Length: 120
Image (cartoon, rainbow, N blue to C red; front, side, top):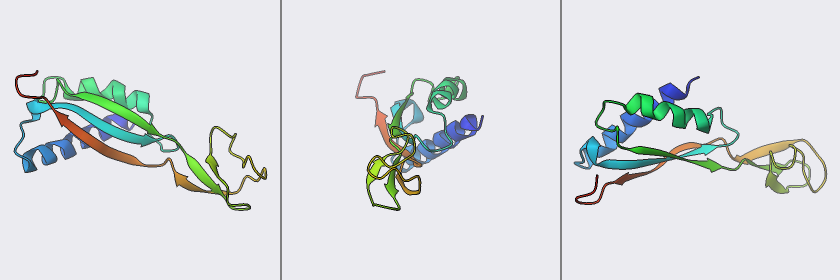
């Protein structure tokens, strides 16, 4: 399970952004990440690792939110763009299997939200 290492990398990058913006890590309420459904990252494992990685740190009250990016491909035969997994990995237009990934392999830190004044 490489998700624990990914969680530590998220913390490292969030820490750098917080420092650049003069924020304390305890001010961070939520970290939103985007995970492509065709990536090698398992969203459920990522969420399960978050509490263990942040426990006892300044970020322990921060929530991790994972948003899924749908895997979309372009058919090499007819050019149709379609949802790869939803269509059993073949083009719904011509039935071809050959395709090129358009989206769904990404992993991004999308947003870092901070607590509002007086909120914990």
